[in-house]
Length: 284
Image (cartoon, rainbow, N blue to C red):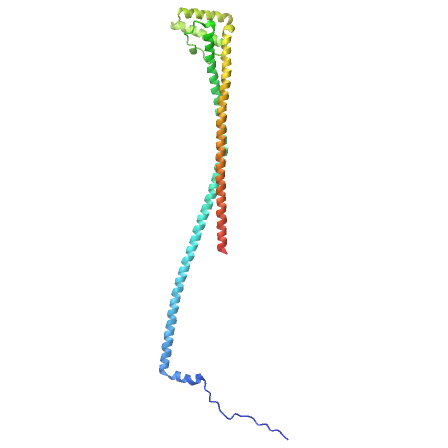
């Protein structure tokens, strides 16, 4: 037995047409449809071109506006940076300048006050010395007027003859008395009572000048020393008070200036920190 194999062949033919095969020949051959397609394509192309032109214009406007905004931001940042830097530098320069001023005030003010104190002390000594001399002259004249041997000579202007050069020594007083006698004799002012009194004085001091003139000189010298010391103490006290006030004023001034310098430095550091922080934030 031999098996036979019969091939299977379909007996029907497919009549299915694709949509492209069905309509394409019709579209391609239809003149109206071709016209519609061309019009559609032209309008679509034109609209795309118009849209593209509008987009180009809008993009250009946006780009220009963006560039302007960027320039404004950059300009604003530069302005803020410049202002901040100027303020920082101003604070720093001001602080440095005031620091120099404080040092100058402290050094030169102290030196100036010290120099003034030396000059004022010397002047105080000189003033006290002159006050002591004048007081000694007045004391010598007062003692002469109260000494018995000089009675009868009250009309003589002793201040014209007793001075700084002769009031403090016996020989100086004796010389002053001789000058009185010579001057009155020359001027014709010598009256009999004055002549007799001067002769009595001359005889007394010629025999014992220490006895008659010694108390006068002692009173003058004691008064000079006491007055000089008193005046010196008073004047030096004034100088010390004035110099202390000057040193205090200098110290207060330096303190105030240093406080201002410290404030300026603190402001500088704060501004610098804020600027750096702002720049760091922008970079992020």
